[in-house]
Amino acid sequence: MPSFATSPGTRDIIAPDAARWRSFQQVFADVVEAAGFAHIIPPMFEDLGVFLRVGETTEIVTKEMYDFEDKGGRRVALRPEQTASVCRAFVEHRPVTPWKVWYAGPNFRYEKPQQGRYRQFDQVGVEVLGVDDPQLDAEVIALAVEFYRRLGLRGVQLSLNSLGDSGDRDRYAAVLLAHFSTHRDALSAESRATLERNPLRVLDSKRPEDAALIAAAPRMADQLSEAAASHFVAVQSALLAGGVGFVVNDRLVRGLDYYRRTTFEFVSTSLVAAHTAIGGGGRYDGLVAELGGPDTPGIGFALGLDRTLLACDAEGVFGAPAARVEVFVVDATGGSEAGAVCTELRRAGIGTDRAYDDRSMKAQMKSADRAGARLAIIIGDDERSAKTAIIRTMEGGSQQTVQRDALVTHVRQALGR
Ligand code: HAM
Figure 1 (cartoon, rainbow, N blue to C red):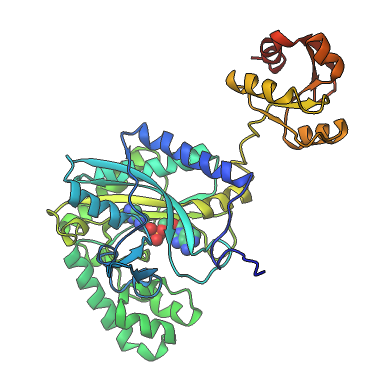
Figure 2 (cartoon, protein in one colour; figure 1 turned 180 degrees about the vertical axis):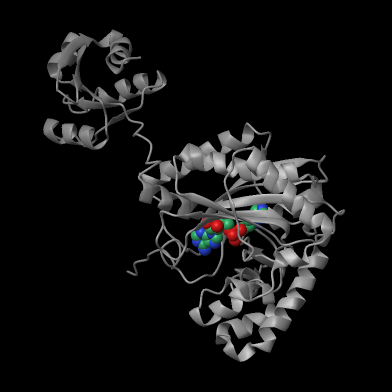
């Protein structure tokens, strides 16, 4: 028989991590719903054309897309991110603006798998459509910062940049192309190839041979239109007023083409691996129009769940939530009692588990321990005939015998509720 394992770049998320994932998403929902964001669940695949709008020179489109023709002859793709889907949904449903939505779920990119980089990875994120105000940029960024605070993360740095309006960005790309082309031979082979496709991305190169040319490259700040420059100043003032620390990094270009004006990235200083970017976002003021909708500004961010949890591990914060099983029923009558006791306790909202197959008392106590239960309810033949049960604390081992028909009350008391 063949045996199977997960595909490269994918993982099974099992206990205790699966519960941790869920509470990560819950904490995020709590933070953003309290700020007026509504949940959106876009489909995991859609028309390839939606994702091509992310930018035909970005790697997630040119190299990493999981696209295929479905049985109806449609060209579809698994989503590599969710911003484009949200904009498509905006165009499709025409909701009232400002439209503030949040999402959580998996995305797919055919990347080279390694620690912190997967082919299926999860994000939580928000998008706001229909607002130009720089106050919103600061508010959106502050929400991410607040979420990191709730997780307990301390080592998160915010880098901020402005990529200007589309004219500014095009002008800057031309200036960069001229700069790098003059010194083309000094660039790494990879950067020479990148230069043809997207001169801005050369700034992302970490190759030592590119460092000097990048340091000497023209600055985006010098190409910003007056409107984009004053927007950027206003975002910075609002962040400072809100007590959100940041560094301006004018080499921050981000991996997606749709960004305009404000762009930002969160880097974990606790991660030493190559992938320290735990979240990022920015404005994408032209994207809705590119998807066939009215000219609509947009801003948002996505935080990588997998990587953020690695940062939590590194900082020793946001561990897995405690086990939900509080009580374990140890049935030494051959199994006739456990079912009814479980039903009764579970119905009373008390997390309860049991053993099967008429295991020995010792084996059942071991299972109780493994389940993380605080109490064991022990019922043997004597207790069954006397209509009683023994409540035993797992830690300390103190015991009391109680009436079977008052079990729920006694268990609640023993749990301190
Ligand atoms: P992104 O920078 O491509 O932006 O992804 C955001 C975050 O997702 C990254 O910072 C990283 O933590 C995580 N991530 C990305 N790729 C992987 C991977 N292969 N494995 C593990 N984690 C990964 C976006 O996706 C934009 N949609 C963000 C946005 C929202 N911009 C505006 N609105």
